[in-house]
Length: 100
Image: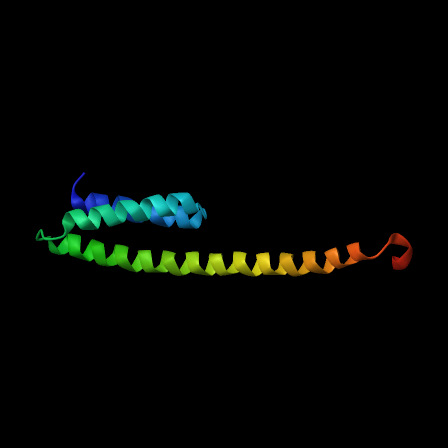
């Protein structure tokens, strides 16, 4: 697989993983992208490879934003559950006769 094909393949993998909310796959693909970028450093690249890298960079940023948003959503839900749990656990201090 040449560099251009690899870049396109990784872009498709990253987009697919994010769409599926498959965070393990997003992380693995992110690692593969980092490895690929390291291997390309210091070597001249064709204009088509540079354009593909720019597209991948834009996609990577969008996926990063999406992951951050999803992380914030989970954080908000967890906070809401903690508040609900705290409210419900307050009832434990009462005996059944006191609640009636």
